[in-house]
Image 1 (cartoon, helix red, strand yellow):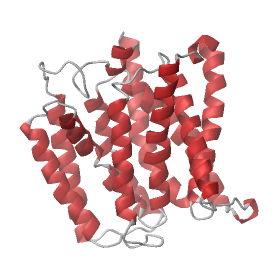
Image 2: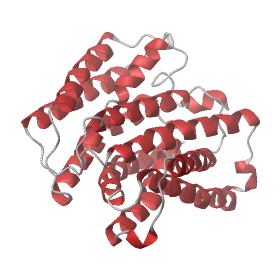
Image 3: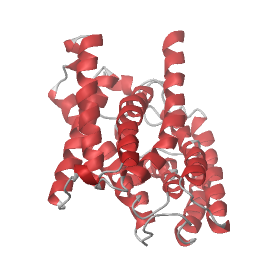
Image 4: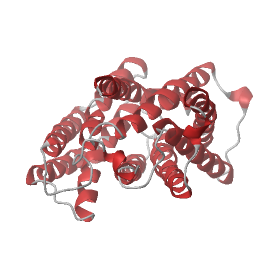
Length: 316
């Protein structure tokens, strides 16, 4: 049990650091690779690599799942890698990587609201944090583009907020749907389903891959996203969702933006004005309020994010 707990926290540490760096990697990737195809091929390759690794390490039985479990994995793949990550990739053609990370920090706010819609009763502190977070998000969205962003467009921040909603729905459902017992088998199916959806969407949207036009920087960034962002970090995220309370896992939301902003400033020439810094600070304070409030025990709840030690075990 102690080793499993240690592994869960180590995996969460990977999510903290690696996902914070993926925003910059996405920015460099979409400089010369079409966004939807870059995300689709990224997840298809990562899923295709992870599945045989699972079979080799845990045996082919680990990949067996019921029809309901497979359906859940596909649905989560459409919500997390495809909708959640896919829209962020598209948005980063128009918003700075650091700003995208700050907007994605809205995930805990969405989760709190979704819990309320599902009949649970988050604390008053939680909703106070959501209210504060909305103020911070408004400041970020209305504060104007970040200096150094690529092709700033008004809809860029809204795409990120929509992506965060999709990610939140997938996160909440992952604690309620029947999922495969092996978290890495679950991650493999999610990435394959999400990757296929993004690839099809890219082709339908008219995207075409011109290998000769892809820069070395984009190749390195895309490779980093496949290995570190998908194989390592996404698998770690799925693993910790089944081992730690969702409210604890959600703490990545206030670590990732800090790392993303620092990397964007250091390597992409992004410069935040007073409005962006103020909005970002408000959002991070709100996330801390929400996550800390959700860590408090809530004995009246029998299921839901943060209410049980191992949420995914309920469905196994």
